[in-house]
Image 1 (cartoon, rainbow, N blue to C red):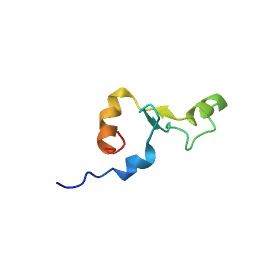
Image 2: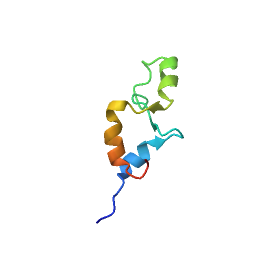
Image 3: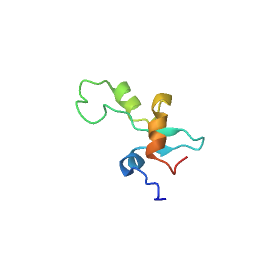
Image 4: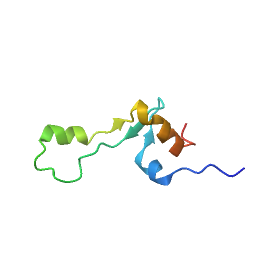
Length: 66
């Protein structure tokens, strides 16, 4: 039986919290920031939790994290 490999691109983008949830970065914080107000940019800098609909695909990419 071969070893189960982790998707390295996913391992660099997601991290697991203490309670088992998966943290991710928010989108829309890289460029075209002049038209976004300061409150929106502050909120986009904070991490978010992966939605329940996407959890199965994240678990498949990170088999050793759970």
